[in-house]
Image (cartoon, rainbow, N blue to C red; front, side, top):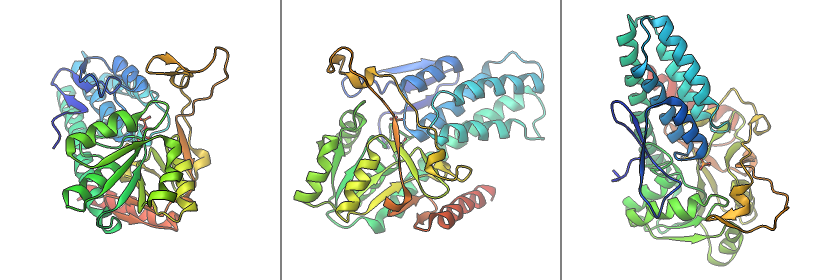
Amino acid sequence: MTTYRSIEWRGDSIRLLDQRRLPHVTEYLDFTDYRALADAIQAMVVRGAPAIGAAAAYGLALTAAQSQAQDVAALSGELVGAAAVLRAARPTAVNLAWAVDRMLRCSVEPDIAGVDALREAMLDEANAIAAEDVRTNRQIGLNAMELVPQGATIIHHCNTGSLATVDYGTALGVIRTAHEQGKQVHAYLDETRPRLQGAALSAWELIQLGVPHTVIVDGASGHIMRTRGVDLCVVGCDRVAANGDTANKIGTYNLALVAHAHGVPFYVAAPTSTIDLATPTGDDIAIEERGPEEVTTIGGVQVTPAGADVANPAFDVTPAAYITAVITEMGIARPPYGESLRRMVELAEEERAV
Ligand code: MRU
């Protein structure tokens, strides 16, 4: 386990490691109000699809714990209101809506007798979501091992490690598992403009884990594949549509195209909570557009001339045709994804039911 925690329940508050200040400053912020927590998710104090889902789940547990409601109906109403605010914080990562919906489903379980029982149920469910996330990530790492050869050179995009999850990570967890198994892997980390999650966060995590790595600018992946040889790419995701089209951090699509051109396998590491069978294709995924200042400045320094027009889509969609396989905690889904992804989700639901 890592020595830092992206999210921690403190009994009367939620503690987040402020990822905006890493790698230079390790600062934790405490949240005692779901509105402030929603703002922190939007501002990317906490980020990464599984991490924002777990943070929102604790936000609802916090709402329940603080409520002055005298009956279940009143408290349920407060939870529905808080859920709407938390869910709206970021639109693309389905884990946020998934965790919020799961908490709301739990809040209307018929055997909840009173407000204290509802408070307890909310905290139990948030803890369950957090614990499942860690187990899931470890299993994704193990399931991926048949795809990672000894001595593999791997390209990774964004940050998908302990910071982006409750712990361990998904795609970065695959690299970590391979390292822990003595596979002597080397990771190339896309810096991931505009917010530099790869350069700032993934490098920070891999240094602490002792995983050999090299940070590259996003545009270098083609050159690295052509001149140095790459065995595979592995990335995380924010939403996998029913047909396998996958939304992930902006630049993922470019990496997938380059991998395709070089015959390099392109893997998506995805907890089944990121598979959204209700979204038919990538065209149906809402892509978050963030403020221009993330593009016009680097480290607070303006890099564009005044008046430059700027677009800042935070995610892109990689069509399923460019994805070799989706690695989940229930196994490896391969094309045709319509069938294989559904099967993974069913297996996860069956497991949760026992
Ligand atoms: O905008 P971010 O930093 O929240 O985007 C994160 C990503 O795109 C990750 O690849 C994805 O959420 C998976 S994290 C395990």
